[in-house]
Length: 202
Ligand code: ZN
Image 1 (cartoon, rainbow, N blue to C red):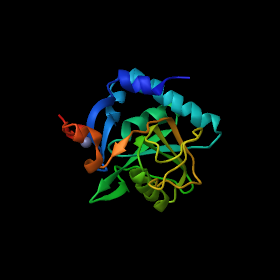
Image 2: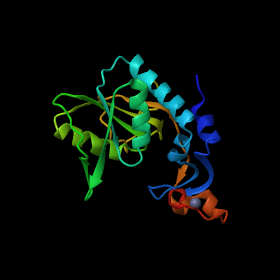
Image 3: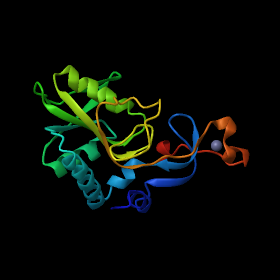
Image 4: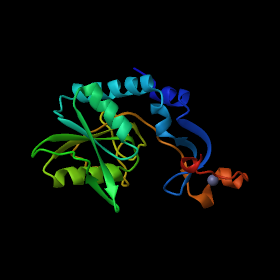
């Protein structure tokens, strides 16, 4: 069994410090998912492990679709590991759309893939875009799961923030559940440390 957390740490993708999450809450840990995919052999190892979970589940998938931008690399690597088609949807004026000549056949079985699932908001938008075109979304996948949604094989139950449907599987390599604090109650702020937004750093 591979140690996904160690792989993220070695890649510099799991940061430790004092961070502002996209929710506005503070945490002492942060996942910089893109960093784990900059090493192409590491990306391949992770995608193959995720592909194995999907194959073992016996679920039938024709196509992987990722929401741009964050999901594209993970989606492409996963599709390559499964030897199936890889497409992506992207936001145009705030709405997720299939563009660039990509097409979906009626009833085509699509798995939505992200690099990381937090509450699953973007993945759900991608799912709606695919189903509006006649595709059938059979499940979701991501390298990392932040622990709001329940992944296949984990005892950690879905929380109320999870936007993914409970009747479709989420395949992910590991749960990354972090301590989170509202800014007024953050112990690191109380110690005088200043939180940073890692996503916006150069
Ligand atoms: Zn803080």
